[in-house]
Length: 350
Ligand SMILES: [Zn+2]
Image 1 (tube, helix red, strand yellow):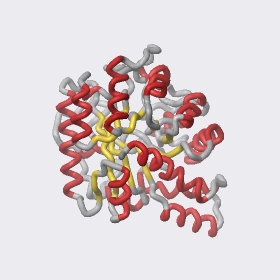
Image 2 (spheres, protein in one colour):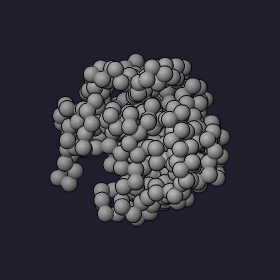
Image 3 (cartoon, protein in one colour):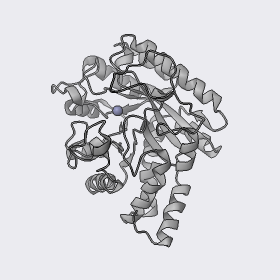
Image 4 (tube, helix red, strand yellow):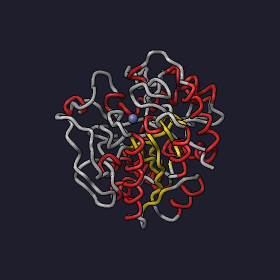
């Protein structure tokens, strides 16, 4: 795929194996949870129910495939569609289902709630699972919901999904609004608790509000570069620079529609037009803007993302090969694979 020499291939393999690899976003819980109701439509039938421990021919992430891909730490997002009326209850169902899956597989995976736990879990040879909430809807406007979610293990919140919610505007419903008072309160409380503020999906005005409020580095857990793909979900160059000044990390997704213009969601033929070279172009672009210390990987696998070269978590070694092909040093590749996010985890997840 990259025309690497044998020596370069071996180098890529060695870097991959020596790195602590972090993937900051997936929607795998949506395929694991067995408690209905499921929000589906005729064109979006329910995904086959899977278990975390068994290799499946469906979907993109399970433990055997995580191990094959050499990934050590994953942020598992609990996404409650705004179509649910009982959102907090749905979040509780998801957290319950996720903890049960983890308990069933405790020899190979564990929930990690701090930087120290992440490092110890990986050292013990297990996968570190960090629980995140995607979209502030399940908080239902109450700060005690955030604190309780923290006590149940959540360590990150993506403030919005596509629509507007009680925290602010998602990029899909961008009215130019600032964060609401509740949104500002949530960011402050996340700083106090030690949670990772995630600005993926948030509108631009809200992003700058977060930057002004936060006392800790923040993450974009699954966003790409707007200069290369104009989707409203992507970050402008100025935002990427601001994120770097904050000490944060932009984690590049495998979502075909956020990598190349004109792809959209749910068109398998169009997705085939995206290659790993396109993903690497986003990496090069972000690094040209801010250097190698503020970029990482946030696949969004099992969330409707991926394309033939990167169609499941077993494909992660290709990222290391691609970075070798693009001329990055061993040290830079290790930072992009996980080191940059670990720096933020160490600061925030105390
Ligand atoms: Zn998302």
